[in-house]
Length: 282
Length: 291
Image (tube, rainbow over all chains, first blue to last red; front, side):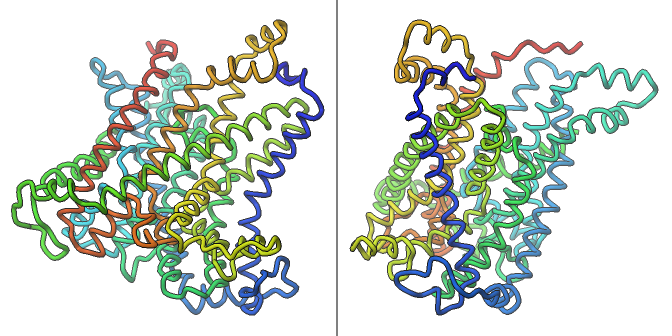
């Protein structure tokens, strides 16, 4: 029994539970509304007062959005960009995180580099929008997957470096040294011992990178026009173009939500640590 | 091994800063990289641009109200969950609750905006539908200037209160138990325990959470783009949206770059504060025991 609560009355507990039930309802209702709007027939979408529980369902909106309006291709684009950029940033970032955690740097250089890396994450994306737009146009990568993959990979680097640095610091260096005494090279020791021990944390880090890249909007909006469009950009364009196609909007929004929800449930407890850059241990 | 990461980060942080510094003094458009030198024109314009100051004020108002709301709701929920733990069944409930609450904040902001756009609709939205049972409405959620700000804030609170909740709950769970035992023996009431123990002990965590959310609010763009497009008029235009509109709808890139530079300055100030707090935490960690 928690000493902080043992003196509290039944009424206090009931109030807490009521508050939590209200919170769950507040979170879930909008998601429920998205779901049922996507499966309603058009006639049931636009009624007043609204149809709370539709009596008949259809997948027509999904067909219209993903097959007819081409959201399927945007969805694939988003998945591919998020996947590739996640792979790149975890590969590069964990190397950097490892060297910051393990190698000797002269003077106070290590914390300085670490904090500089962290500080680049504070950089608001919209600020670098115009400079990066010109840079990418100069090297002829506007409206290409390569531009977005590279950008997303770099945007997630500070996060990966900061997280992996803390994971690697928690793993005792003795384990690696023991492996090296047994005849492994430093790189093999890193791969077979340290990396394996850090795997759960790395997986959670990768999931958060994936979510961030998959959800990104403003760069995808300004750097793509036709060929490399991502799902969020497709959806936003659709909203402004067809104001009343609610079912299709809801269907697209729902499908965009599926990968991130699945991945975040996989990451579970690590989410808190990741989302706060390790300021709070989850 | 550090080099690739450092090089990449250099391109997305130092290069843009230098670029912005230069473009503060140049005129540019979408067609030409090389603009003409305009001296301090952009800064004069910043000083007298009512729309820019409106956007800054909007950002400040939305940030202040949304973050306070999220803090109060998040703290309430965190205290409620923390107070009802103990049995294994409760901890299973806690995991489920956490998983449900994670959803809004990992959803693509665009999807969140879609959800709320459907619900806010004046004629067929579910919110007005619900209010009509009580004879209220229809309420023009997105087309009235003041209400549009409220709608944006509510959407932000829906998406990010869970973040406050999770951070504060983690903070609460990590609090030491001894002071509470002592307080119980001294006969402190629940309110006294909250005011004199929980709040002061939780202060660093609250500060970090609030600062993270404040910096996020400076980036508020996606939901504005889908819900209101900065309108009606300029009622909900945030600083991010202002920069986007100036650059990509008015094609006034030099000026947009100068405003970006100003925003960078603001953010640097906030992030310095954040790093200072993190730095204090870092120094408190036990000394490194590396050979």
